[in-house]
Structure formats: C-alpha cells, structure tokens
Image 1 (cartoon, helix red, strand yellow):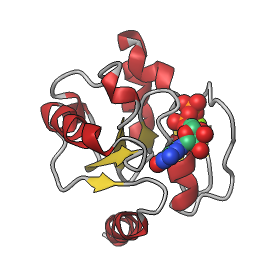
Image 2: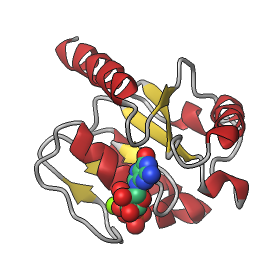
Image 3: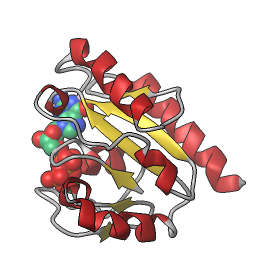
Image 4: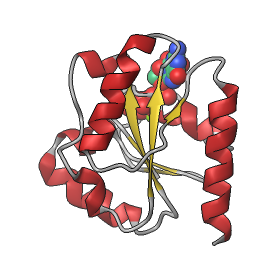
Length: 144
Ligand SMILES: Nc1nc2c(ncn2[C@@H]2O[C@H](COP(=O)(O)OP(=O)(O)OP(=O)(O)O)[C@@H](O)[C@H]2O)c(=O)[nH]1
Ligand SMILES: [Mg+2]
C-alpha cells in the first residue's frame, strides 16, 4: 500500500513497482490495483480518515510511506509516530529527489519522526538503483 500527500508520486511509484492498472491524474479514492493499493492523499490530511488507511493496510503486505521532496517545503504530512498504527512493515520512500535534492534530509527527518525505520529509498527520475533496491525489499516481504 502506498500512502503520501497529494501529488507526491504514489501512482508513479506504483508503476515502477510493476503495477499494471495505474490511474493517471488525481486519485480521489482508494485504488486497488493488481499489485498495489494507492490511498488518496486526502485520507492522510484528514485525521478522521486515518481509520480507512489503517483498515486498508490490513490487506497489504507492506506500507510505503512517501515523503515528497518538493512538497515537503510547503507542508509536513505525517503526525509523529504515525507509522506505529500499521500492522504490516513500513518502508520509507522520498520521491522527487531529482527536483529538490536539498529537501531530502528534511523528508528523512519527517519519516524518522513518524516512526519509519530506515533505510529510506530516494526515488526520482534517473534514480534507478534506489527503485531496484526497493523492488527487492518488497519482493522479500512477499515471500515471507
Ligand atoms: N521529477 C519527478 N517527478 C515526479 C516524481 N514522481 C512523480 N512525479 C510527477 O509528479 C506528478 C504527480 O505524480 P503522481 O504519481 O500522479 O502522484 P500521486 O501521489 O499519485 O498524485 P495523487 O493521486 O493526485 O495524489 C506527475 O506529474 C509525475 O510525473 C519524481 O520522482 N520525480
Ligand atoms: Mg495517484
């Protein structure tokens, strides 16, 4: 399951992780694909919607919490300790590292504060090694 603020790159990352049924454009509802579940950013922004994220995560093998290097300068997304609400293992990803590399450390700080264990995966156009490493980690969880 992929969660993150609006426009953070959830659908783009789902595609990189092998999702075949990617919806382009804004995703206003929970999207159950073949390999991924994409949660709308609005569910994160409204505390009273968090219960839906927690429930949907029960169908997932892992939860990928995305911090957006570009959006992070405007607004933080995750309440402190938020990763602790999920049953499945949580993986931290920073997207759009290509666009604002200087913001990556702030994103990592946010993920750490949210209780996401490292290492974090930096993705962005051209960051193929990180995507490959992330694919491997997800595949390892799948076989457990
Ligand atoms: N440069 C760059 N652009 C990215 C990256 N990830 C996503 N984008 C772009 O950011 C925009 C939003 O990406 P989406 O994957 O649709 O984001 P989303 O989180 O699914 O958006 P919503 O479903 O609307 O919340 C698109 O134009 C993507 O091409 C990235 O790592 N680097
Ligand atoms: Mg989307």
